[in-house]
Length: 323
Ligand code: F6P
Image (cartoon, rainbow, N blue to C red; front, side):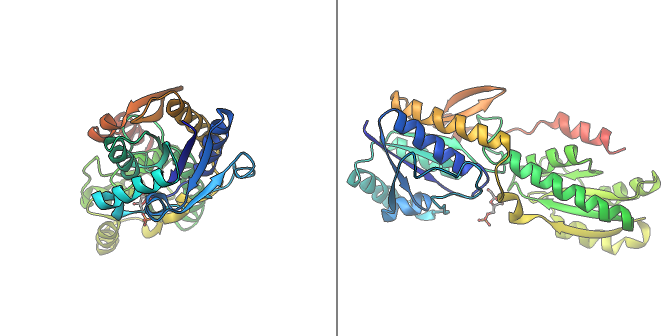
């Protein structure tokens, strides 16, 4: 193998840049050439390539976003899109590829693997919903952003004796909401994995008020059903029966930006380097990840066939801490 490609794909998150840096510098260390593919699979289909070397990835270890850009690329889900991608890889003499991204992007990597192309994936998504790794790149920084927001919201909530619904990202996974709720000292956590009725939410607010709390913070995962809007409407309809007035903050894409935390920089550096080492040693069709303190590999097939299971013991812990 003489030349490899690297791309970032799907929703961005903090830590993509240190990962691109680690991929590039590790590859250079093995004597490989590196091509950065811009805008993920969309750029791969359109042939948007730039050469990377050790200097090109200087000064980015602490930068949010991705110097390569990223995109959601539905065209890559088609055989035609995949064929164009393979054609461009061939045209640019790229013999191996590192794909940095979440579930969808790694499933795309699996498609390339099934076409016989050497590929290794690196899990990067703030949602932490990639099977086979206990943490994805970007999760820790997003959690810290959430905690900063909850701390600030608590200040104003206490001053006004209000309840706040704080909606966090995570797609269909409640990880960010649950961890944010436990670490942020929330009074309630609403996640897709645990059914909570609107009546129970209202009762939770009332209980917190009766216990003498000066605020009530409810962290709501964006994937929680029936959704933040339905909760707000219900609480507003019953406002005479609740102790607290209700306000809502949707944190949104703020969670995706910012300088990566120490943990994310380290994880991105370790996983980026491990991905290149696997490629260099001829181990393909894999994703690298972390379990405990150990860097591990898992086949992309296994990743795609598995589901992430949230640690619901932490949900029980959150309930104890609500008091
Ligand atoms: O997968 C990351 C994520 O931020 C999810 O938490 C969220 O549901 C989605 O992406 C938002 O996507 P977009 O930036 O395309 O609106």
